[in-house]
Image: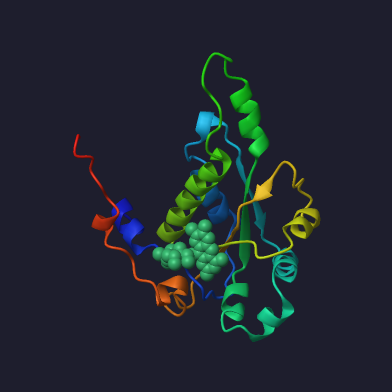
Length: 198
Ligand SMILES: Cc1cc2nc3c(=O)[nH]c(=O)nc-3n(C[C@H](O)[C@H](O)[C@H](O)COP(=O)(O)O)c2cc1C
């Protein structure tokens, strides 16, 4: 599919079917998403793929409340997603990379680039997911990030998940639209400014 079509078509899915997907598709998507730019080419983004049912169940047990799982209209359609991907960023990689620059340069990290680069990579993943005809929802980790780190054996002082990508086949793409139920998209011309000097 042509890039502009993919960009226009992409939207978050909040109602998944339980249909499983192959590891090959996931690997293909994530390999492309890791082709994203990174500050100083630090490459401090990586992905943990929760693929086994038990792992996905544990993700929900840890990061959501039982009350939400039992009573939210959204819960079943979200928890159907057979795969949960945790995009992880390493601040340390950036600190190490930037400290290797010559001291004479002004290479301080004025912006937490690990989060910027995490977003760059996730965006590529979302576009590839759309291109594959799959659905995805990027969500924040609601709670117990430390417990999640322990459960999946990653060192929270080195790697931190910036959220989670729910991945699967959409059951109904338009059923739940999240914030777009009550907020409309801004007119892009209100967000694009040209400097009068350019
Ligand atoms: C950083 C970030 C965090 C988000 N967190 C959530 C979330 O926790 N739950 C949710 O339903 N949607 C979440 N979203 C999805 C947004 O609500 C969604 O992107 C926005 O409403 C625009 O809709 P679209 O992506 O379908 O075009 C998040 C998006 C981003 C970029």
